[in-house]
Image (cartoon, rainbow, N blue to C red; front, side):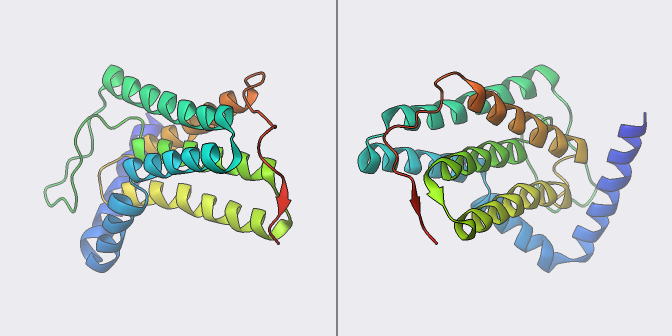
Length: 192
């Protein structure tokens, strides 16, 4: 059981640091509870969808975006219910979370939303500057949310890895759907 051994060792090491570094732990709680919270990311997705409809008349693109986010959420919740993996338990917890552990909903939602946003930007923005900035922000967000979940002791590292991989699979499937990405209705332009 190498994965179980790795999960335990990594989670224990992160928890020791979280207890010893309360300032970093507080920052991780703010990031995970407000900035990278799944509800926050889903609301951001909805705001972008409304913008797509109002500004670009891109109904199909908005439906693709919202539909993919919703399907990702359903998949994640279904897997949590089916697998029922227990979360780490600590004698001195620095945070708490309800429901099953695998896959990490924070990690999966961040991967889905950031992946879909990158796909949108790839289709409608030219110029290396905006693309590089968006890619860096997406990588920081996806990696950061996963690290905060392990640091706070509410997920095993494999929960986060599973969330990342499942999120990437959802994005790949959404991008592969024939006619799933409507090119009409969004003007491609340079922001650099």
